[in-house]
Amino acid sequence: MTARRGLLIILSSPSGAGKSTLSGRLRAWDPTLSFSISATTRAPRPGEVDGQHYHFTDEAAFKKLVAEGQMLEHAHVFGNFYGSPRGPVEEAINAGRDVLFDVDWQGAQQIRNSALGEHVLSIFFLPPSIHELHRRLISRGQDSAEVIAKRMQRSWDEISHWDSYDYVLVNDDLDATETRLRTIVESERMRRKQQPGLVEHVRKLHSEFEDTQ
Image 1 (cartoon, one colour):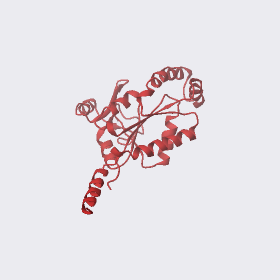
Image 2: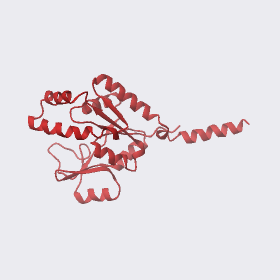
Image 3: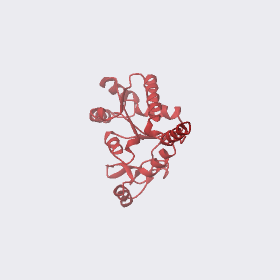
Image 4: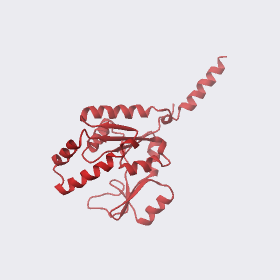
């Protein structure tokens, strides 16, 4: 039977809810998973490699791809454009490989409404409480009090869109959440629409059935 079709796995959460950690664990569990490499119009930073960290391009070329429907999602951030090219993702899922996306609810919505939307699996992670979310941001020791305050303000906007996702997991225990995440991915991989070879297999069964009559 033909190999399954890959999934576009979207992981979203407010900052501090554990998305990056869970994404890393998911990739450790299945090394065939890969991140979608974004395209951007900003200049490369020291050490960044084209095609590895980002696909670097100019504004005219970026807008042309958008106009041609070759961006699954895109946004204008701090004077530069960012987006997810459709071509590499489509090639991956047609080969049976899943692709991870780390996007916010707006990016998730755009991908859901794209030409590849039927293969999307979207998962949102909620913190067990706002107090715990704030504690996690502080404990990381990466941001100033001002930046943490901004992240907390933005977190509610993210959380308010929880119901636009296929699955929502409360990350109150990292190991338990990882187990649930794996279960979801494994189950979604077996959906009928992800198995293009089923139609031909059923036709073969029908032919065999007719031969026995």
